[in-house]
Image 1 (spheres, rainbow, N blue to C red):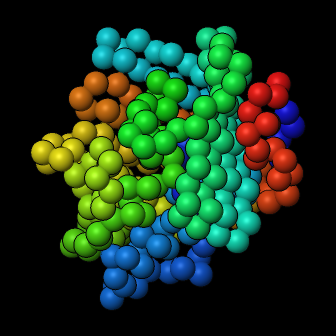
Image 2 (tube, rainbow, N blue to C red; image 1 turned 180 degrees about the vertical axis):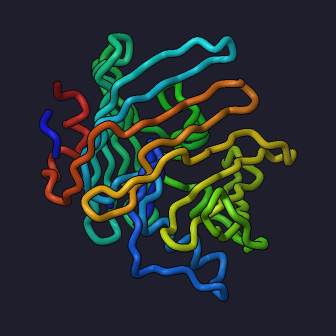
Length: 264
């Protein structure tokens, strides 16, 4: 595979790692509403790539401080309100070839996972979307921002995260299938990048925490290049580090198909 999409997560993978592209034209305003802040953040694809291919180093750390290192290739494409994301695990051997396809067509979300051991893909739907994404601390729902996008939003007092002035937004998911009671986000005013996200369960206990650890400029765009998400209940961590990125919007559409999941 050679190096070579308004709503989504990783999703940074997001995402999958928390990678986002920031637009200076969207400068922050103090009278902005919570809905508009989230809309602007999602426009930047905070856990996706908005048209790019990236290589990602992933480290999973369990409660005994044991590490599991993975290599991932992530691609994305955006066509109007339709965003597509494709993820393939390259190493180690036990996950190599495992592939994921997510399509967000203006809020109509479809996800597929391909497991080489089964030789076929399966659709992720319903409460399955709250499950761990291939053993990481992201859920499938996290990958497309469902619980942040489909929510009742409230703006809280602004705060700083490091040197960044941030909007603080509380999002309460509207779906009864959501694993979260609320999600709180700290979104940088100058870049619309989410610098910190905290996920709370229905009882109000903090369940997961996402922290941005590094941002850089790539081809003139601000990008989150390293992030850490911690599952506080499992005492499990996933660190994502972008090692190589090629920002472009011309990845062939055929690459974002269910058929492409099984290709080597």
